[in-house]
Length: 210
Image (cartoon, rainbow, N blue to C red; front, side, top):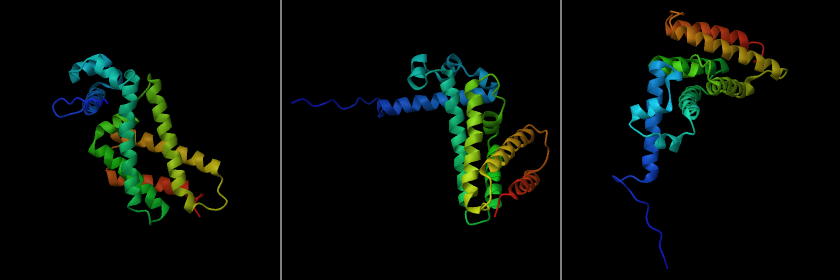
């Protein structure tokens, strides 16, 4: 009768733990380079050199540079969605426009606390098919999220296609406003910006709410 050998451990860590640490290091370094120089500067060789890892370890976690860029984007997008969800949960018994304000406020406060999120999630991704698709998908996800959130409050006669068009319009406009505010084109206090966005949201939502 034979017994399988226990997994070898180095420094008290398993192979899986060390692999996860290397992946986290690559993600963090890739995000640093993106923040400093833009997404186009994120290369396999540049990331490995700064991380002190060989390309073997890069390909252990990512198929190519695009996979790393996508993973960085996805991680920040998911964090932002989690914060939006938490903000909405905190006001779940309030009217729907309060939900929308909570979601917008969560995004704007997040971008105030960490400017790199705005650069990566809302910045210029021209030239990267992967990132452009990620951005389009994120807008569609946010659209369906808001529509699902609004369902209990909608009037019986609502045309869902019209609602989707208005929601896409609102989210697209919100993204452009966020970019203008982030880069200083809109030099207004956060509370004033939220008040203006509240007015726009109320106008867009008025025809759909019961």
